[in-house]
Image (cartoon, rainbow, N blue to C red; front, side, top):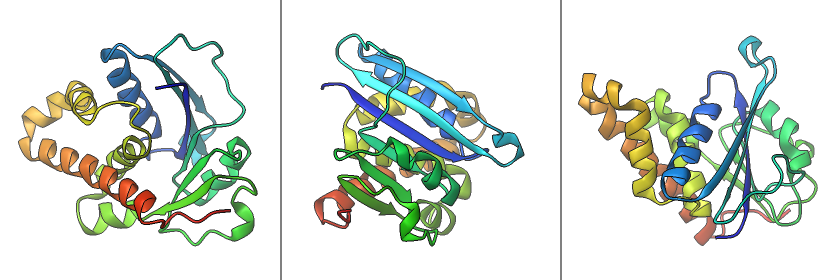
Length: 195
C-alpha cells in the first residue's frame, strides 16, 4: 500500500471524527502509519466538520495535503466544502439521499460515487449506524485496513456499549459490512459517474 489520503466531511453529530479515529487506530494496530487531523469548524452550531486521514506503510512526511485520493461528503454543505480537495485521481463519494446541484460537485475527479447511506441506515438498520456504513464504504474502496482490524478497533471504541446491549455489536458489524458491499458494488458495476 502506498500513501492514501482521505478527507471525510459531514455535519456535526454525523460521527465523522469517530470514523477517522477508529480507522487510524485499526491501521496503527496493524503496524501501518496513520495520521489523523480533525478540523472542527462551527459544527456544534451546525457547521461542517472535516477529518483528514493519511495511511501508509512508510513514514508519512507532511501532515496536510492539497488533494485527496478519496473524499467523502456526507451532506450538501460538505460537498461544497470538500470539492477543492478533489483532483484527477480522486474518488469523490457523496450520499445520494441528497439532491445536490451539479455545480456543487468538483469539476475534476476520477469518479463521482453516490451511495444511499442515510437511506440504508434509516430504512434497513438504524439511523445511529449511518457513520459505520460510511466507514465500511471507505474500507471497501481503499483496503486501507482489513475488515477484521476495523472490527477490533470498533470493539475497542464501543465495547462498553456492546456489553450493555449485545445487539449493538451485531448492528454495527452489519452496518460495516453493508457499507463495504455498497462501495464495492458501486465500483464494480460502474455506478460511479465520470466527471
